[in-house]
Amino acid sequence: MFPSLARVCEPVALCELAQVVRSKNAGPTLLTLDVFFRDAAACTRAACSPALAPLAVPLLYEVPAGSVQRHLLPKLRAIKFTLSRAVCEASPGDVDLCGAQQHAPLLGLTL
Amino acid sequence: MTALHATSRLRASHRPGTEALRVLSASGQLGYGIPAASFERGMARWPHFVSANMGSINPGPYDLATGLMDAPGSSARRDLALVLAATLKAGVPPIIGSAATADAQSQLDRVTAPVREIAAELGHSLRLVTMASDILAEGVVQALAQGRLAAIGPMPDPTEDEILSFSHIVGQCGVETFQPTLKADPDVILVGRACDTAIFAALPALLGYPLGLALHMAKIIGCASLCCEPGGRDAMLTELTTDGFTPESRNPARQATSDSMAAQALYEQASPETVEEPGGTLHLQSARHEAVDQRRTHVSGACFAPRLRPTLKIKGATRLCARALLVAGVDDPGLIDVLDAVLQDVTVKVRSPIPGDWQLVPHVYGRGAAPRLAPAQQSAHEVGLVLEFIAPERELARTLAAVYKQNLLHHGYPARVTTAGNLAFALTPSVVDADMACRFVLHHIMADVPVDEFFKQSVHDLVNGSLS
Image (tube, rainbow over all chains, first blue to last red; front, side, top):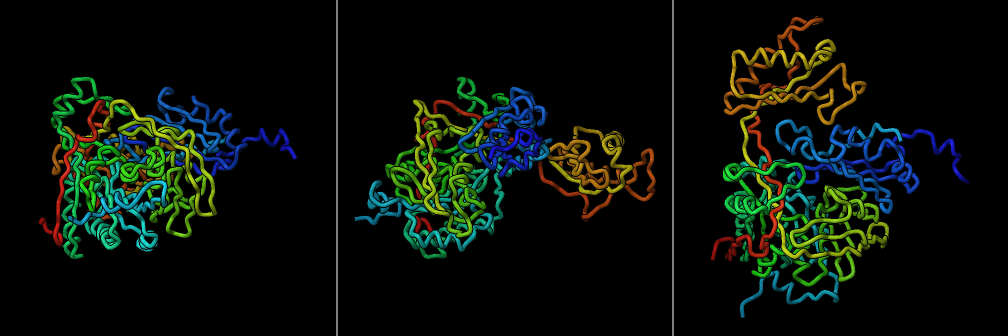
């Protein structure tokens, strides 16, 4: 059975498609976001979604467009984003030393 | 003939290609309470050596800047005693890297002392080899002048004067840097700042295992059972052969699946397919993950490409200013609505009696303190305030927090209906001394460093815990 086209195009919450959504510091100057999807179709759909496009994620995180790298990892059914941190880890003004709660903006996305 | 110590016994008796090398990852956070049952189950598998990571940048620059240790001394001692008693009894070497959070000499000393005490309590004679990873500021100044210093991510290059003023600078010891310590035939190895990988891969590398496999294994098991489904802090026993490795959590509830193994290689990692090490680059593109059974996965295929001239990752931290905190709740929707403006007004009000070079950093939980929240998701009914006051002197920081508290408590704003007070305090005192603000000032790559002879090691031959 093929899923109907209408169903494929229905907007769906990222949380419906993802198994793991996480953020973490990668050294004190970088932040990395990993999203692991339930299956290959979900990963493909997410990779094609405007909400996770290379220009959309910098807007979501309010950082310059050039400071985000997107890695598509179909073998792992995953997408990774690596961002520059606006404030270095733990310098005055930083809000999340480990960067472990910076996945939250992704949780609200609709793909 | 002199009796061999633990590392030489292993080197004399183990040949890659015969039996598998059994590596026990005791902990990725030694000092915060190792789960004892799974560690003991790991020791029951007769590991050839035991490794544990004791440091992290996660607690921030405070420990490196001050020389302190994030883990409480008593729980660090408890974990060290657990690992030392088991490994000395089994006659296998424990390798503890990134000793005491931030890993400078002062932190290394905080671990060396209890190790000696524990050895004495156990009545053991042993050879302890330590390596501090402190770097002289002059060497960094020279690297800056010669153009051998490059920032990792957005981190400004410091000036020469700044470098000379930094509290502590450490370099990250890689597999190559560990080699002299292992060749000194230790029973126990304690190293300062270390690559997470080197703590687990250095001894397999010395024994002749392929570096790509050893480093990939280290990347996966470096945080113990965090690589499993569900993740946890239990010890991990890994069998390493010349064609791959098979990790297994010593907590039966945790499964090392092919997905969880692959995912762990991305953890805290800027790039998904390469890991930069002092001596070269670990390439993971060709890694393969094959399920052995429900709880184990065989991992193979990673390779290592050495670079011609080794590099060293360095980290520096410094103290900034004193800091005090005000912690309070706000439950009046009228105040929450105008809170940003009120905090600014009160800041202006407080500057009048208390001038000077001070700064307020407000964290308003419920309104998007970490990370930002869209307006529709912000709480209109209750928010938590953590107000940071940063000032040159501790007394000034505390004074500011106290004066600010009283002014905010009774500040008038349009539409105010209460006349009693604007804040809910859960704590007495409501003003908390938060020691000092610190910052990382170096997170750089120093090029062209002779990493295998850069740091000084010390050999301590202990008889019942005392120097012989």
